[in-house]
Amino acid sequence: MTGEPAHPLDLAALADHMAAHLDGVTPPLTARQFAGGMSNPTFELTDAAGRRFVLRKKPPGDLLPSAHAVDREFRIMSALKGGDVPVADPLVLCMDDAVIGQAFYIMAHVDGRVFRELELPGMAASERAAIYDAMNDTLAKLHRVDWRAAGLVGFGRPENFVARQIAVWREGGYAQRQVKRWTAQYQASATDDLDAMNRLIDWLPENLPEHAETTIAHGDFRLENMIFHPTEPRVLAVVDWELSTLGDPLADLAYNCLPWHMPDARRGDLRANDPAQTGIPAEADYLAAYARRTGRADTGDWTFYLVLSLFRLGAIAQGVYKRGLDGNATSSAALQRRDVCRNLSDIAWALITAAGRD
Image (cartoon, rainbow, N blue to C red):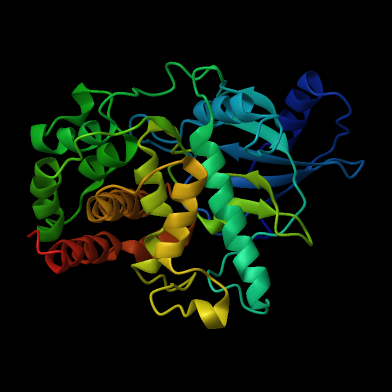
């Protein structure tokens, strides 16, 4: 965590609002902002009695259409609460900008471990294996949720998920349609003409999978977005639901598997992973476990889904960089992301070339 919040809160107004909507809140509040996030600013709140909460809010400034929808986060967490997919207890949603300047929601604080390094240093191989297996199991459980029974009809457009994410690029008019947030973000925030991104825009529509299932898709499912039990390899909460929708589960899975294909200076990567030494599974074994848990015969056109995930991640990174230029980013590190979109699109095109599909 950081000390002084980069996005200061009106703690008096916030305490009044919480006291009016939650039992047992004891003003005054203190706040510490979580470090590392690049999108919705997130804070740990502590009241005078020592009770802790977590607040997520929209960032200040002019925002891209449909981005930072804290109400969607609150809705999906409310729908999943008490089911097989663990989430923090959602407590209060406030869409009134007058309270602290931006819409926000408050959830219960979850004590546990957050793993930010993919190689899980300092653990025994058996512990690493168990952590990765728990992550795999949690994703499979999410994709098995009956979204209709969970009250999520209307949460996304279930049909033609992949095609919708790409079509807007060819038509050049994201504002005219309800499109996936990441595609809209790139088009609105592009600062350079990137050749690989342009080629991907042409390649992806020509290689769409013929059939796609619809499930709940987290949209940012990775090790860092889970809180594990303090001592057990058990997921206590999946967090950061900002990009969740109804979508293609294999797109969600491919995003989760990107560490086996790309470097990350902060988190590390699994491209040179030796399962026999580390306990971390090979990608093929990870995919097989997921397929077994979800009853799938295979994971479809895997090259396509990896390329789609890299394309999407590049669009998100470009949006982060643009917010940094505009002074609206959650972290000053946003300005270091100028080349991220370029690098990711280059990796995606290299995958296409390696598969002989360029």
